[in-house]
Image (tube, rainbow, N blue to C red; front, side, top):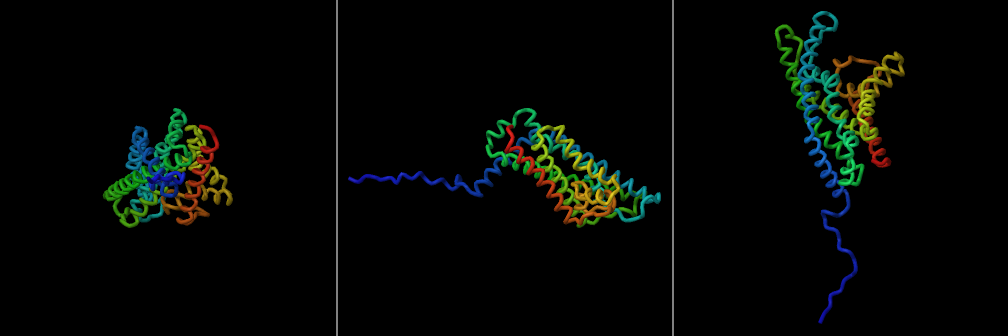
Length: 288
């Protein structure tokens, strides 16, 4: 008679449960999918995206009419006006604030309602929670921004085909596509940075104030200083760095110490990463 022997070693983990990069990515994808379900199930998300589309539909053609009118009155030098530049103008001055309204409640509302506790129980790795929220917001905002940018470009082009405005507007498909994509990237960066700030501050009011100051308040204050240092620093803030990235002359005009599109994009990535890093640090070190 034979007897079986055991080595006393625990069974090896199955391939789908083994630790490693593949498992980490799988867990992140599952968490991001859950965050997407939460994001799309909240009415405020759809209201915010609808507001972004409405603002684009109103501001882009309105900016086209205003720009042409100023050229006809001699207030601006006559030049061709790419329709996609009017969509960029609308995105920077109006649509981005609707995007902030979409991104802000993603984490601040969970703190205010205390639903952050079951979220962290379901996903104990806190950094993964923030990464999942950022991914869900980024995918949603980027896709929506492509649509709103295309709509704004088309409406601005249609308005500038009116006989009163004819001769000023242009529509180059290649340039328009590049402008729409760059604008979508800018809006996505703003949304993701908002998630990071919300995670760091946890209060919707404090996060909204901070994001507004970073986007608009501080750059305007630095520009109003009228000094070389103020203009230089303003150009490195998210707002003007984003304008440099989208490479638009119609949003705010050319200014001293402006960055190249590549440098503007790099600065935008830096601010977004810094916001997420601050949010991740607070999320890890501070009790929910």
